[in-house]
Length: 178
Image (cartoon, rainbow, N blue to C red; front, side):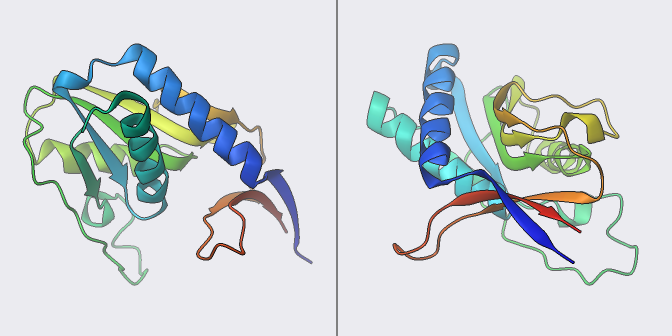
């Protein structure tokens, strides 16, 4: 039997995005920075952070999207591949990269994103921003620099960010229990 529990509702997500945007503004010099969202759902969060940073600072920070499909260590394990688009139409060489994803779980997606990024050049620095950090499930030594919420979960619980497709829907972060 499946049951879902709301971890963050739409208002809480908005407040978290606002806080994360302000933390980034406080810490980063945007003159040499780019923002890159990890496909698929990290891009949705990255777009919201990018937009809010622009609204607050009027800084037009270059924005891109990166797909990790062919850089993952599990892409040959019989799963059908559903690659997304990588859109990086600027140089990342000697830039500060703010990499954004929705949920940090094992660290494998971020490791794959780092590998994919390096095919575009050598950044000066890469910082990681995530909405949800599932810190006790890490398989690789990857830690976020900016965190919306830390969640301590067991492996049999999924954490899913659901972005609204229509105005009638609400953004939510759910625990999905088996």
